[in-house]
Length: 355
Image (cartoon, rainbow, N blue to C red; front, side, top):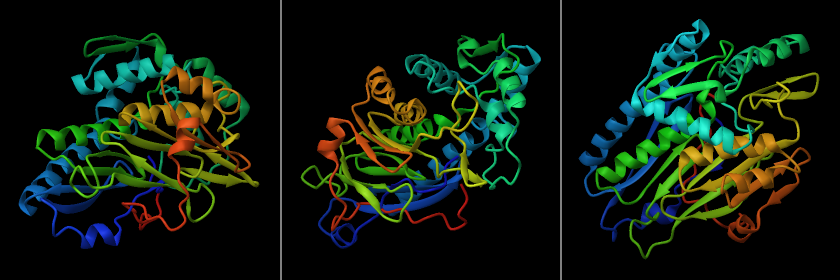
């Protein structure tokens, strides 16, 4: 779970000072969940209504934190135990639907997005937010895990009943659960009549409406964080409903003899990817954006544009291992220099510095 702020989002003085003539007020809340800070900015007419919504959202996040994370007691852990035992398991409809979508996106991305790597993530020590001092696994250990079966394609899903022929499979939904949580919160806000909001989960975010709270106000302005330096690579403007997600090698990593080892594992080799520093994508929902950012990060040079087309992702910014930028033409058209431009919402770094 990423705790580093990938997409800097912040509230400029214009919004703070310019609320008097708006039909709604801006209300903000910060919740720690899923290993990251979730920053909520919503426009509601009444502070009491806003606080009630924040309470509902906290319940949603608590459920995701328990049931969608493989290393705490909950639904996903129980499913993984059943797979290991060679037995079927029943899960809730929302989790079953997310696993179906994860399986679809994995196939569509030609396996570059692979949620079946939980055992390898654990082997490398990236299942914890604590910086890992352990020695990297041996080549034999990695090969043994790959041979045991790590593909989500091995799942057989019948409604809420899930089983797998591969007992070595361990699902890790870290590459898609945050997107699902953000989408769920946005759906909840829309159901409650909120038209203008931003949900920012550790820098992965989705917006509805506009930053000023009226259709004639400017859209949400989001800064893309530099993966190695303090500052922004640029600013993008988000349309209502769009999500912007980043995968980066700075989210969960440790250095070993000058080599950066991080949590994004190549499903073909079993080793952390070395050819990319960060990938930011813009998509129409959080689930797709979350999975696509990981898939394109893993695909790397020569393949990421092809995989983006397969996933129907038009807006991509990639930072390669040397720090050079690659962009799709639509993203280049939307990216603006950060100099002198304030991001609408800037989430400060996490106080504890956790990943």
